[in-house]
Image 1 (cartoon, rainbow, N blue to C red):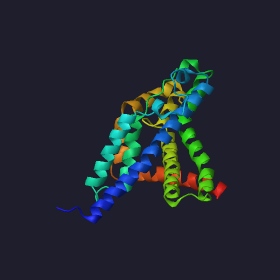
Image 2: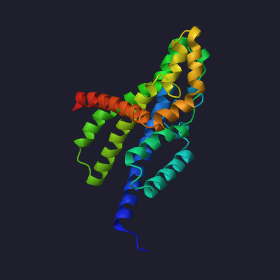
Image 3: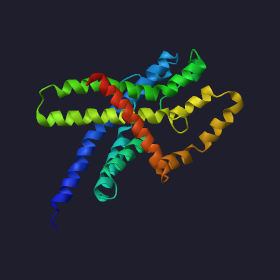
Image 4: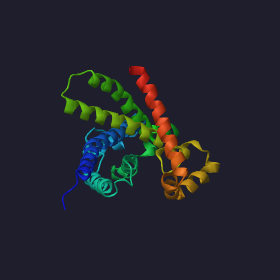
Length: 244
């Protein structure tokens, strides 16, 4: 049976998404890990630096084999479930499960020169790093738009930069959520007084359920993801207004 042109076009579209998203996620995850190691070092803990995390080498921050497996799954889902799963839903799939393949960074909180401040700053480091990355790329995007590159290189580069900005901002907002399993949830340990630390323990105990509800439960997931996307969009609009 001959392969239909429409089917081939869809396969090419999925492959194009992968070709763009793979370097995007590598950059976002690498910068995120590097920035967190830098914040930990600034707060007095050089454990991550000694373990080789204070680098922009993707191999130090990302399990490439796992990310490639995720890419294959993304391709199969995109091809097999055309018409059922939208590109946005597939992108969310990458966002949710992509973090699974980042290398956990070691921290020694006892080395912070200020335990509470160090804990809060390292909890915020993911968001701060992602916002910084997006902010740095906005003026770079403006420069690229005004450089006479070949059309194919121009379009690919523009798409990669725009996706990095969007995903970095999405992760930045997501990491701010002060509820486990998000990075912001770790702030509760340092902010809440000892008398109410049981709240943090309860949230951590049910973090997986919280995760499932926020991302997959009808209505709640729509509200949650919609709020994150809208917040990221507002930050993006503010950043672009500074340079465009």
